[in-house]
Image (tube, rainbow, N blue to C red):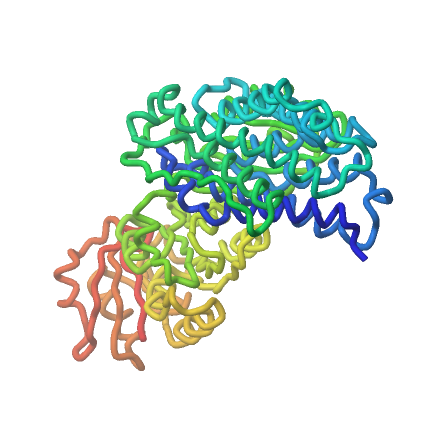
Length: 545
């Protein structure tokens, strides 16, 4: 039988998570910067969910006495740290840690207004100390005001309600804490409303601070659990989304919001901060000598992880592409969508085609070889929980599989080996269908595609068939034509079209024949579909169906 105290605690945490979850998108939309930390509701919800899951793990038949308060709160603080995402999530984890440490330092005491005041004060200090240059008008300010409210109320509470005796019933404890918390929430809402006066960018955008609003919602959930299902609760004001965004704000100079855990011995956050700041900004490094949580905005997530080489083991990598988290993405992905798709692309035209077909595009660069971190960021940028990943290169398949394994989402790889294969497969994709249905449809589409291409030879052929710079045509990786660009293109199309009704031609960067003249090089009876791809290395990418 589960311990009632743990059940009560979990009920409170679940209510806090549920309150935030109900308005998660509203919190997300408040952010004035189109960055990963702009998904404040998501980041804070992930932290709360991690705490709730840890409670589920601990609630395995042991009593609270058997577990011990110290072990319980330490485990929850660590869970919050491990589950934190973005600035807002990491700061929230420090609020949890600060409160947990204070609760653990008072064994045997009931959780009453005095202990809550101490815990909130410790939590506020922990949150501020986690940020190197704290700014007013943020969630730090809001929580400080909430903590101050609880402390100020002690002077006006009867002594027997300030400190509860050990024989106080759970109902009496809940009532006393609810009364204190209700006033603190009201003061927190007032602090949220003042944030535009403290941070100019909020006033310019017509919004309040998203993280502070998220904190109020979390505490409103706690209050609801303490009051009970039938109680009248204070209304938490809704807030409208940001009117404008500020892509040039300091938080968005870098592309990737990077989070990971470092496990080792003798770790100290101070020894790593300066090196991380050389790679990016919004640096947060928190934790203890054995575990550090790292958050940084950077263009090079791998370099950020390399900072800890030799110091400990890097795990729990989470990377978000901040440039993709914009309103257009949300508008493009209908709320009815069940499945999202991530594709690797190279070439301005091809990337645009992928995006038009509903895909989140991870730029592959000239070598079509993005990192695992970049792929993981692409997966996380998709606003649904089920994701199909098209690597579009045999060299990317393993990295894509690793990214899917690291993601908290249900993500699977469809091992497309070329961009043209991925493009034609996407025709069968439907965001309204589930992941398994999409995977089956696209697998069947890929099975019916024959791919080829024409590229300039990089060196003389050992068999003497062509020289460097000559056109070389390929079908399924095998050389099938060579010579002049026009004749090679025509021969390659003919070889691909033997059992096909349509050949797709995607013109690359530097292709020697204009797209509108490609039809002159098509064998009789072969229908061509033409696109500007802009891809490097290949003059033309070809696919037949």
